[in-house]
Image 1: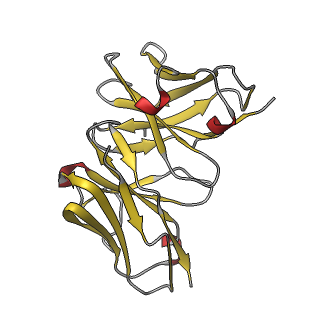
Image 2: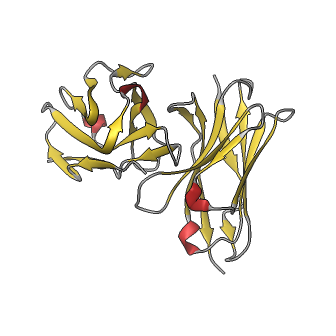
Length: 109
Length: 116
């Protein structure tokens, strides 16, 4: 099974700063098969990025995704108050068909 | 726009079967992958399985033979059955529409507690 490991577990930053979140896979993952989600308390996750770098509909351009192989990154260029949430990476393929990372909590410093 | 809504009992006894339904409104259940995903309290996301609109299924092996997902296209609904539940099955259960690779649309989720 391919395991996704996200780091850091908790990231403390201030509004206006840049956030960089990491997702590392235990085996190579096709860039086409890597996605990122945002989850706020009490809400369902929301798709942010698919295909490692394509923004989903309605996602602001301060969110960007990059990476290939085993290392992927979600960057938020200038943090807005509404960006503080938990972020998950997810991969498609293999068994089980879909797996998620354990999440990174982005909290206000 | 298309919306998903989970429904079903919020409390299930240990060893019994958890049954949930997801109703798709504002659009057809055709041509997508319809998924169940769960989240234990304070923890991360776990994919349970999907059914394609044609009826083919794929399940997470970690659930072994406990899970069944079915679809009723006439009602625009799909359902989850999880048998022999334990306290470890407590959590928020989400239905989600998949575009094969990712999950583009989610329901709001429903909390299911397993307790006697």
